[in-house]
Length: 244
Image (tube, rainbow, N blue to C red; front, side, top):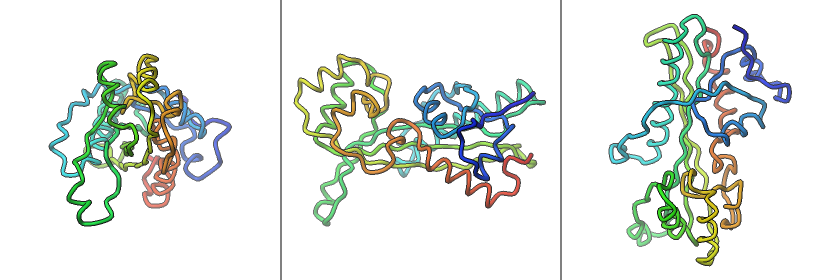
């Protein structure tokens, strides 16, 4: 079966040339991730993962490991399912991603401030409008950290038949001191209800934000630049990458 996820608009790099005529899968139904990948010249097949995303956050020594682990479980579930479904047409690359928001991440500058730092709360998608408003009130006038875990799964010749390369990308989002009526209006609009942290930086949520330190697209759901850097690194360091 013919596959090609590389669009004509893609930059001609060693990584994109290697991806030509390969079966590339995005293990997510997120339209934002699809749009970001398309903007950088890739149009993978969309096969949403059925992983429950119920890993206990408390089991991770470092909270940044949580979205990476979730992304990895998503990618592995899709890879294994597609191999079982059609062993003659396995994926060449499965991309998993998971984005979370961590509150209260202002850097500490003195020992006293280090002692005052609170443990960050992990914000995923709000479960209701009330939950969305609670999140925004907590973020209002503060700094949060958006973390996207990205996991790449691709075939190798040794057991279990695939390998995993993963990373996380971190971006600081500074919220303005917004009046309560603006936050309430945003919640009523409903834009943030299916977004980690309860806001969409690429939409009306931009009205709530003062500045961003880091990759804008990471806040939207997928760090395209870091993803391409990882592809380039794999091309340089792994002779088996996308050749099996």
